[in-house]
Length: 191
Image (cartoon, rainbow, N blue to C red):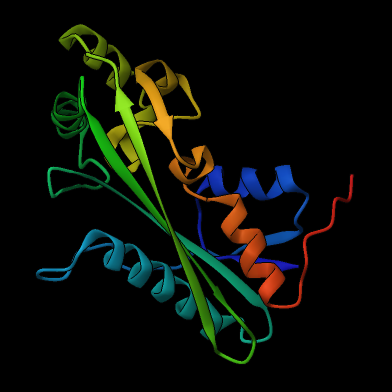
């Protein structure tokens, strides 16, 4: 069994889909960028900090953590603070491409932390103001980096995805499997 250092229902769902036994122990780590920090560095740092924070509570377990960052034109689009902020972000993304960066960290019982990072390019359809308002009114974008969920009704906003779809959801499963394999816990198809 591994410990998932995240309260994200999407990450939990992906581990369940894979049949990976886990328990959830969310990390309480502020998700703020440091001055001049590059998005990839930020995602890896935050995933690592989350893994380490939960490792201190559960030093006997494998701790899996992740962090997702959305960036466009060098601007970070984190989780919106409210509906107006979500609308603002969606207007920025409309008709354009952006990068979704998801880092995954695995803390071993020894205290060693191994991490990997995935970058996916996502293209949005051109969105009308009414489409944006209607989507925000669903409540779906309010807890997601970039203000959308590719796995929910937000899928209608997407024109195409180049890269790991699961990375856009918040947990690139191939990287999780690679990290577990490297830790001596190879993935098994247990259906």
